[in-house]
Length: 57
Image (cartoon, rainbow, N blue to C red; front, side, top):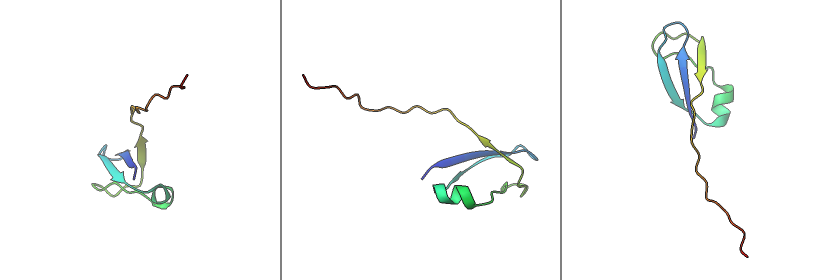
């Protein structure tokens, strides 16, 4: 399941939640520290390594 990262705009508390895609779409998130719903999603860069496929000749 994906890890979603947030920062509370009210108290600046960063936190992360592991949610299914469906939960992420439907669940109303709240800051665990101050209970505010005024959150900002944190977009973290990531690196994906894939196997290189070469055509057999």
